[in-house]
Image (cartoon, rainbow, N blue to C red; front, side):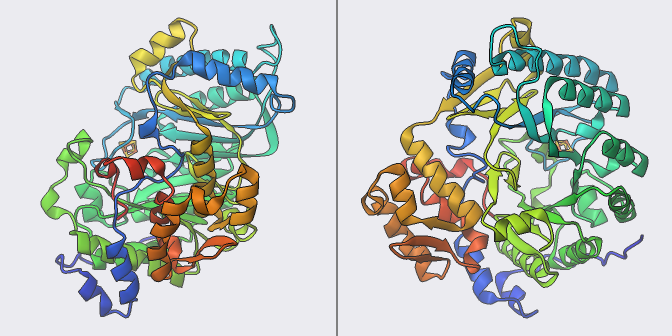
Length: 490
Ligand code: SF4
């Protein structure tokens, strides 16, 4: 399918200009006002709070606790597996990746992952000597990167066979994979389906050819349509498309066209991320011409445009940056109050322990977070010693757990039921969260939350700002002057 893309307009977008097409100026003004720095809360505390004092022994202790508590050892787990390789560099990239055209680099890496699985299985085994017995069922597997589709069909098949030998997969389990449209064909999608993957996430970012060129990630619209069509025929249960706004060369006109194309594509889910230009922190971004970047006001207009387009096309706000068709399981889970959040974003899966495999992966075992070494050498060196390749992490305090629950309730359900929360944690809510309740008054005045003695509820208008609302409960942010380290909300 070929969709005509209109030429880009000059960068004249602004909040004022955005008013003309009939968009809500109130929303644009709110977007501008709440354009504050903040984390995405795929975890709380956020990964920048992890400490190097937390090492393999601490993670082993967390696994030991998991083994010791009756009923916990067999509780389902989620797995995230990081494939760090990419064939080409996207200039906006802030991920942990290795750019290489040498496909032969994958095999030794997968051998390392196999060694890591062995070490992890020893930790999961309920009794001494039972390491080879499958002990934990996997309810969710996500292959991310980098580019998991850097792996050949045979390597992906071997990897899945290894995982299935090591773990029992729940039936049904969510098996998802990030797909770089430039690296797959409909035949490859068929192979992924035959391996059991039932969810795909396509990294598109923008359909505009000039924007794609500016970020060094070029793929034709026809290519993406063909892949999505093939994925549907193969009956993948959910198809996600990632878009980014704030990229170089984007204008309201060009992005409106991209959104129109997206709506024609009708993915089940859309993740709409803001580009944060931090070239001193992320080297690839130095290749982006900052003169070509939309201004702050233009970014506000682009986001407002995206929100309006998604809503008009019938997509439901799942939460921060995420939308889904009303029939998608995420939207259903949200309606039923069963939405969860983990390192991959929103999920329908109840909270599970998460095993992160591969370089830089993060695990969540019991009340701990831990992260693997980010570079291949350190990762490999730990495995050479038969150790979990963990280099930092955190054991959560009671206050961390309380705040995590408050933040996740707001991010996922949009509601914090005060009496139940207070009873669960045995605390006096109004005194424990006194400063937070004062801060929330401002959000309430803007119509973004409703406050009562019974509940804190995010309003429909407040969903766009749910991250800013959650930040009120983040003790670390309140204490430290760290906001500049995080990507901007817009
Ligand atoms: S954005 Fe993704 S595909 Fe592009 S270089 Fe980074 S990790 Fe690789």
